[in-house]
Image (cartoon, rainbow, N blue to C red; front, side, top):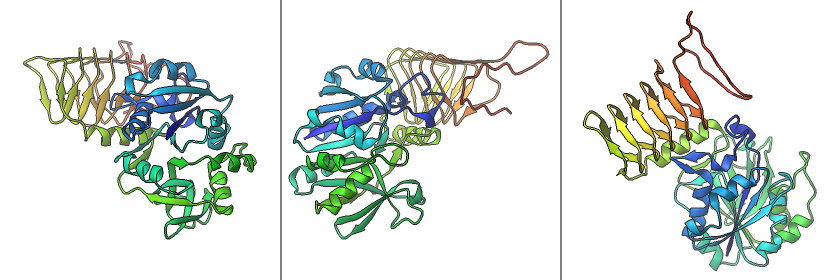
Length: 354
């Protein structure tokens, strides 16, 4: 089997973090989201992986390389524009050939991995296998109508959902999917929809089987989802001490201190992770926080947040929580008199003022 990861989207729901960077490279627990998808595929024995890339392709190439760091071989497939999930599959036909494959959206997480699901599809007779998750708002998703062990209908964002089973961003197909894609037309939003493709397979008598996920699943396309994924992954990490902690600091609970990090006169309460070469001085970092590499935190408190690389937070008088802070950001107490907020903010920014 082969793997295909779609990483060509613009990530508009994660702005401003994704205005200059790929959404699939935003870190969760100090690891880019995309890396989790690659690792899931490799764990399932799939090492020949194609990645569909768009405008941020150079960044993804630089981060992933040839795949050797994962034990994989990566082929990059440029996509001229984000024209739909099925379009991403269509342009990968030469790479995929007649092999069965896993289609993985590069910003999706499932807790338990895909090993048994891949094995079942690899050894079975199904033409397509889709992963489903029960949601309270199925009208916001593609939804499957299931009878026994067969999917009989799929509907994209229905006003009257036939079930609460949302189709999540991990699919498995055989080569028949390419003929199905050639039979569909762009939807009202101008995209080739994967749900339309699956419905063609169903209508033509191919076997489409459902697999309902019972662990957690998260699509990290929104800010709140990123924080939730960060929380869930941090809870599973084993403590590690690869940096330095002085005698006046406290490390409490499940905490990872990565190589070269320095903790001075501070409290780190886990689950949390402190990135490489980051300095935490006279500060408090609370649960469910990820501080990425080469950051500088002094005289401040942070909790339930993600801080990206090379950012500085200095002498902030109130706790920062439930926040996503991008790359090379500087937050500090203003020396201006009279006292005033001084803000340099880009498009799509959000700030909560005490």
